[in-house]
Image (cartoon, rainbow, N blue to C red; front, side, top):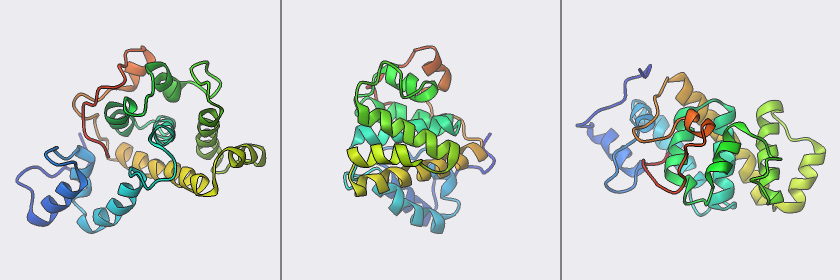
Length: 200
């Protein structure tokens, strides 16, 4: 059970308007958003940055973005946010079940990765999670592959999803209905490409 009770319908006017703005039209707000709406001032501020991170304005593409997010959420042990992104974005990003499994419990050297840039992103997330830093050798390799705006976006994207992971875990949020679990990745039971829930 969530440590802070999510809002339920009928939503108060201010909170209802905020929740509608955070979701695609006609899609019910996810649990995380309904908990965050308990503090609408904070959530309104978060919404701007979160929207940027998931927008086309982000300097890295959808696939690179989801590699960073899924690896970050898995490293943080955040099944809730990991499941939302697998369900809604993994198929759109062209991630295979083997790649989702690798992002969850594998490593950058797994045979499912044949793109050096993608392997570097995984290593960058691992370094940031482990050390709070990226060493000189890895940074040099990243800088040879990605632009400066992309490097800035990757580091802050990883940090943002650390924060979201810390929040979702601390709140004890259960996976959204229909979203996969870490065990699905461990068993190779994922079917990428079928959006089943809305995204945060």
